[in-house]
Length: 319
Image 1 (cartoon, helix red, strand yellow):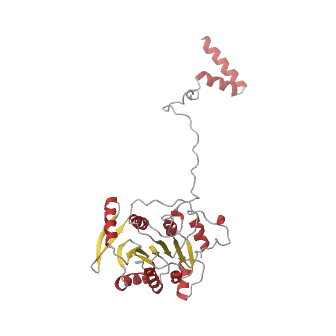
Image 2: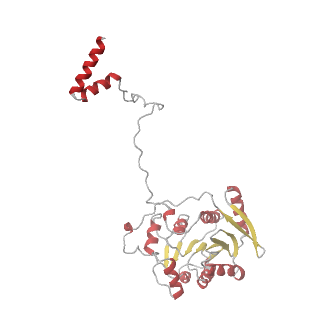
Image 3: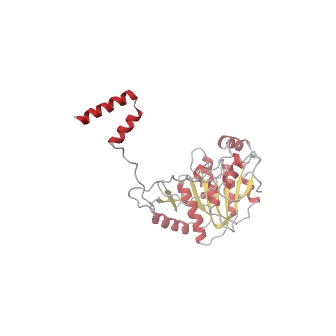
């Protein structure tokens, strides 16, 4: 369902020169975890595609697209400019995403990548019509915040994930969207979703065995030394909680519009820097002598003053 950019030219849109300039909420801890999970899956030769439900302006999608392997497919599902089918969802769209357009998403994504992902424009409930069951290794859910929609998204993604696939749920604890929290922990309690770890904004889980990922994640964080973490237990199962304040960010996608630094102005060799072979060392401008200053003064002063100075100098020499 990928279509060309809408009628307005991309040249008229803002051109992000770095990921931080793209509107959205995608913090260092989650960038590190997205990067780690995708690399960990690759190290274990786990195959599968990538999926994102809810894209906003494309910040996390751009990041995921930079980790996409040549034989993989990346699908992004979002309403963009399409109207929602129910009044409550339409109200949320108007309140939270009034500036969201597919055109802006595409322009942002193409600032960092040569090709768009596969785009499904519509409710996240239709994603199962476009993605094969058991084909996704990593899914990010950040669409509607309403309980019934999030619950449906979780169930849909469960069918689309591979046996060891990872699902990420955004805003699982935000006070303005309790429906996400309700749907997340209901899936843990009743739908077999098993937590791996949590950050301040996202929940990471799987319907497979979380223990190998948790063990490898703890070893990685211990080796880094700049990520705070602890292990808690939920329903007798371990859950890693982590924070990455002050941690170094992972490699960022490179924009094709990145700013080019201005060339430095040519500088003369300094006194301590040896001159180029065969070249005369640069000399400082001569310091004016006392006689030079006098000659200049005589040239620029009025004649009456000049004659007075000359007479005074003659009298001084004859004394």
